[in-house]
Image (cartoon, one colour):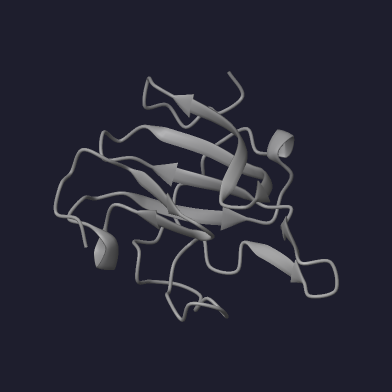
Length: 124
C-alpha cells in the first residue's frame, strides 16, 4: 500500500491499482461498465468501488474494479482485454473514462478521456 495521495491509478504488469482501500490512502473509486467506450457519454452517479471491494480476480485473488479485465489464451499466450469501459473518480473529483485497447509484455495501450471540469459529461 502506498500512502501517498499524489496518484490515481497504477499498473504493475497485468495488475491495475487505484489509490484507495487496500492499495493506497487516497479516495479514488472506479467501476467497470459492460459498454463500448463510445457508448459511455455520462459518468454513472453510483456504483464506484475502492480497491479491495468488488469482484475477486481469478489470477491474483485481489478484489478491484479491474478484476478479470482480460481473457488469457493458453494456446497462443495472448492477453486480450475485455470490451469494457472503466470510469474512475480521481482524488481531485474528476472523472476519467478508460478503455484498455491492448496489453503485451507489460505494456498497455489505452484510450481515455479526462473530464477536468468535474462534470459527469464524458462526451466532450
